[in-house]
Image (cartoon, rainbow, N blue to C red; front, side, top):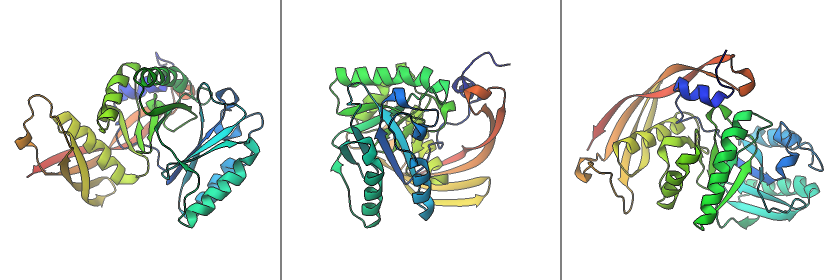
Length: 318
């Protein structure tokens, strides 16, 4: 029997890799809906929330473009009016009635397929923190603390970020989880103490590497390579942007890639790291390893064997 009630604690102990685990979709849609009305499954919400949106997203994803719909809530929002945020389009539609949602979504998907945009431009970055305790208690315990810290600090610093509570984002064993949009960056295992560093990275247009799960609009080995090499470069003290040049899937349990490293503008390297020692390119090899972790807080003793990619070797080139 475990000595904790939280799957996130056990996953930390298992050392299951974080980088490369971001949930993927071609489109993410966030619908504002009061948190008190969220059900265990977000789209089965109570009150006047329209039914059928889960089936709608499945049907519209059948053409090979995956659509993920989540709910969002925050203090001060009008509970009688609904807003919808579309990504990666970075567009919003505000002031809807709940009954208008199906028509709004149909219009958005129709315009998207014709290469057109729908809605108004979203001016601020948005952060969605999973606090969906009805889905898993990790999200309530860890997500709520991170949400409050982010909300309070962005307000105190007057930052151009909207902070929202979100329904289940995926991978509650990595709670606290959040998405930063429109960047598409997904983060996990965040704690209250990490928020100042997370916001400092955002202000300097960097990725907070230690909590980075990956880019949610990229999947498979490409996501793994980018996310794990972001962490690797951060550990070396290199403030760089990665450009994936080649990727080769050698076998089902190995792949390799080559990336170029471009210094970010105004990059200040960490103490002890000299600019001339930073390579221009690197080649990395990845292999599969197995890790044990539970899938949820209500099944802590049902440990799963997970096959995860890890960096096996890195070769630096000039």
